[in-house]
Amino acid sequence: MATTDLNRRTALQLLAAGGSAALLAGCAGTSNSPPSSNASVDSATGSAGGISITDQRGKTITVVRPVTRVVTIPMPAASLLVAVDRTADHLAAMHNASWVAMRDGIMGTMFPESLALPHEIATQDFTANVESVRALDPDVVIQWSDAQLIEPLEEAGLTVIGLTNTGKQEDVDAWVAMFGAMLGKPERAVEIKARSDAELAAVKEMASSRNLPGPSLLYFNRFTGGLKAAAANSYNDFYIKLVGATNPATGDDPLQGSGMVGLDVEQVLRWDPEIILLGNFDGALPQDLYADPVWQSVSAVKSRRVYKVPLGGYRWDPPGQESPLMWHWLSDIAFPQQQSRLPDKVTEYFDFLYSYKPTADELDKILWTAANGQSDHYQQFNAA
Image (tube, rainbow, N blue to C red):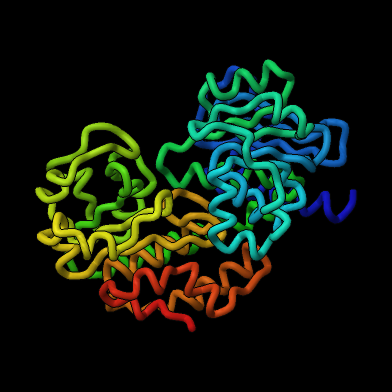
């Protein structure tokens, strides 16, 4: 047996032992097994068995060899694929929102070929243009697990891997495991999960060691054109609580609903959050709140604690491969006395994910140091 095959087999055994990212079985589940946030992978790369992956619908997909052409529709999937692969060579097309993040962030600089890829393959609500996708002749299409999104693709004869997002880190771990398996790089998935687990443990330890009450922290997924905040079962609620802060949208006066929920200014005024985060899905910046009379009575505005979430290889607000950096950034925002020298951590982590070390100017762009420059304690993140 070749050394590469031994390494892959060892990696898959480690994935199985980890439990939360992937469960290894002698056979990869049946197509009617129940959906789960975990993914089962059974790799027989280099043998007649091929690579079998049980996706988050509980359906088993088998490919005869590592895939070389992948179309991604869920927005985190394109950049996650590149991080697992350390190249954009096997990305065939992506959702437009993924492409915009690559264009506006640093991914397009690290992997300029990604900006030339097709990206008008699905509507904003992730409904695929089936004929456009078929014309790309992909080995695999990555899609959200909703039946109405997947069935048209499968009826067209395409191989589809379904993802879910339950607002938990286990989903990211499952995506990494599936992508590593289908690319023939399960050992890379092990590395990424091990690194993420170590960072998660470090952030938890920091949070548990503080004898400080956490601030109330509200995340806006949308601000311009109508407010939407992170409510129950959102990844944002997970990391707000992870760092030791509280989310008023899931507190004593919670938003009704799950995920990103619409609300009005009056609700925010009642909560009076101490910190406000502005996501990367619209163009809102801290200055927009600082200059608007409507927001002047909110504690976060009065104390200049409104921040634009960083935009790296992908947006840091949703789950993804750079989520460990989001956890550390948010810890420093919530508890600014920590002064963790995040730019150094970003540089090292980008080298690990992408084999790329950002310049000081690129770090300032990732961390929005200019846009956040008027906000409290943000000088700690300056790289240039």
